[in-house]
Image (cartoon, protein in one colour):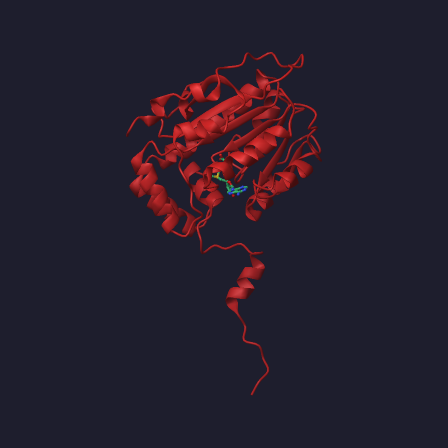
Length: 301
Ligand SMILES: C[S@@+](CC[C@H](N)C(=O)[O-])C[C@H]1O[C@@H](n2cnc3c(N)ncnc32)[C@H](O)[C@@H]1O
């Protein structure tokens, strides 16, 4: 008999990796693969490739969505004169991160990144730094835990001043419609009139994309629910849409872009919280959200 405890390589590896599981594909890492980044493991690449077999447009989907985010942040900083950003489900650092774009326009911009993934937060703290001390903050929280997000974001942001709240390709991780709308509404309640919501998401308009997300789920990754363009537009209820409405990514205030206008099924919009304008905010409101969905997103590939 021996009282030696059997050594477990798996436990040792888990200790070393600080709970990081490289046996299951993760949303942020697979997204990084589709974006052309470098922060993913083989398991994420394999899951990403399985999706691409069914829906080759996934690479354009990810990159078009990211181009939209960059245009929206630049527009809000340059034209709507927003100086504070709260980026929820921020993902792994990529090119054109929110604080990079915002601070290129106005160095005084303050940005808080929130995500529920410990790896994302570790990368974010290391890489998403700003020249201006304390102008970038990080919150590790589930997006449904809006109380924590608001409390911790307030360390960096002045919540009495307008904030652009961003949900870029993350709300599909919340399957229920009410469950997804509630955190959006709560965070928009926590910021003053003149604040903005930026939201983008894939949609069920393309059957290949829907089938690909089923395949993605079968890899063991967290499921991603594709909503209809109209359901995505509901996130903007009670807000004033700015620009063209809730439209395919590449149709929202387009720049010359390598992906062309057709898009892949995803839609995006930017909307302002109504109320008394401060002198800084001179952007004209658009039509109500539910009237403004453009059905170009329904185009089948
Ligand atoms: C598809 S990536 C999008 C990343 C980034 N927003 C972008 O547009 O490039 C989704 C991100 O949402 C995060 N996420 C997933 N579920 C979440 C939740 N319940 N609360 C907060 N973040 C979540 C993931 O960790 C991942 O970083």
